[in-house]
Each structure stands twice: as C-alpha cells, then as structure tokens.
Image 1: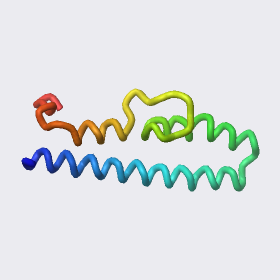
Image 2 (image 1 turned 45 degrees about the horizontal axis):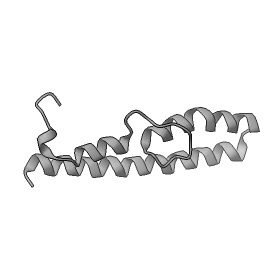
Image 3 (image 1 turned 90 degrees about the vertical axis):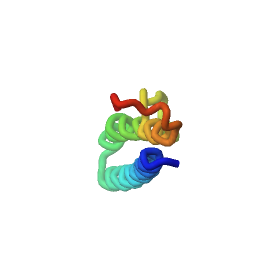
Image 4 (image 1 turned 90 degrees about the horizontal axis):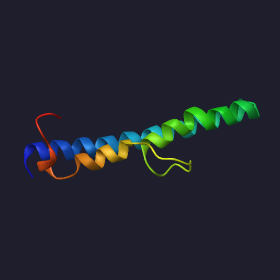
Length: 89
C-alpha cells in the first residue's frame, strides 16, 4: 500500500470513528431533551435535527429515507481503490 493509500485509509477510519462519536453525542443530547422537554419539544427534536443528522451519518438510523452521501459512504469511498483518485479531488 503506497503512502496516499495509507493516508486515505487512515482518514476513512477516523471519519468512521467521528461518526460513532457523533451518534453517542446525539444520544446524550436526546436523553437531555427527553429528561426535561415537553412531548412537543421531544417530537420536534427527533423529527428535525436528530433525523437530519442521523440520516447524514450512515444507514443505521431507524428513520425513513437516506442521505445522498453519508459520512460512512465517504469513508468507504476513501478506503476504495487508489486508482479512483484524481488530481481534481
């Protein structure tokens, strides 16, 4: 594995770790909302910001729909074949 491929793989692994950290933080935030929020506030949080962020992370979210390109998709692409890399990005 050449240096660029190693860097891409390392970046992809870190992106997946960050995604997991975000999930943990979202669970903590929703726990706080559930603890002190009204039913309306809980429903709004779940239906808007929680859903939008979770759908953008990966396919394991429990909501209807799919993000066009999730964080996990990007990480998997970075782990792919090096020949897919171009000078354009």
